[in-house]
Length: 382
Ligand SMILES: [Zn+2]
Image 1: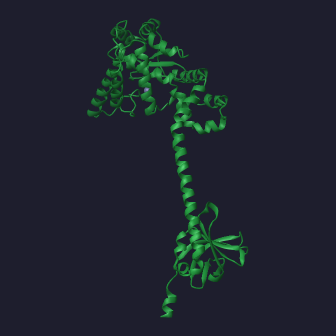
Image 2: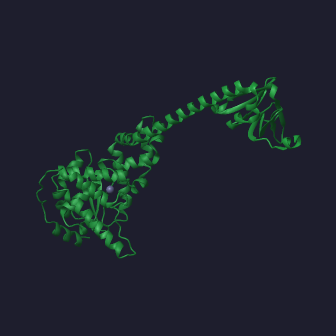
Image 3: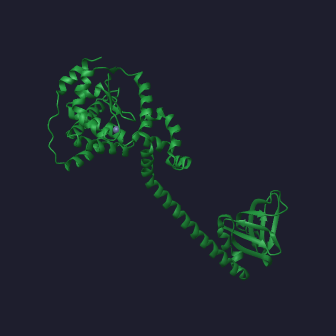
């Protein structure tokens, strides 16, 4: 029977031995306990501590290890992160160790609570920073002078204009500004000068560049049914400018914390970065939040300009219908609806706008100028 008892394999724990005779001072290996003591086993060295001399305590880096020491050899210790070693039957059975073990357990629990509290604090901090981040981005963006945005937007426009067929027709522009003037005023009162360009392009789109250049593709006018629809899209695009979505998305991309760390509040350091990101600005990937913001601010501009904001909704509905028809027909070539982003969905945006319009009690008079004749002249323009 004795032989059989000896054959029971002891439980093995991964452990580290700190020993002055090992190169590097430490090595990893296996720890096990028997009735005669604590054993450390590795290719480099074997070491044991008799139960008589054993000292057990908890602590170490990160305060999460169980240490075994020989009371005669202060500079040597075996430690493991496997706390279950304290429940090993050899230790439990040895009454002389009880006090040390319960103290070590207490230490580990205390330390674990400390770690949990710290972890909780870190999670809270990250959460708070996350919530603050948008505000910080907005704050940083507001520090960027409009001239920088304008310079970046102009640079971008020069590059884009090479591939665009810009329609030059002063009387068309005048007619357009007659309608859009009050809307432009909303933006110009915030320090932006709106520069308008018509581009011969069947794409149903309009977009604004940072600083206030607005490009309207002829496809947008051709597919709109009224001035109000065009103005709705324009209001949205202009809101992207004034809400500084370009620079905010750039800051988002670079990382607000990187910028804060690099500049420590000195925004002039941003100038260099901003001057070199023309390309990024072109591919402004409007986030869901930015689209909603632009819809809502655009709506406010329209109302302030006494333009019926219902036009934006009806334009969205037309686009949605058209998009669905194309999808149903399974047309291979997809129409470019870049004004319509996939996120948020068009229906989301329609619902959101309808909800806001409900609260507005305004009567809108018809806009000046004949939209259809404007459309016809534009179509013929080169
Ligand atoms: Zn947009």
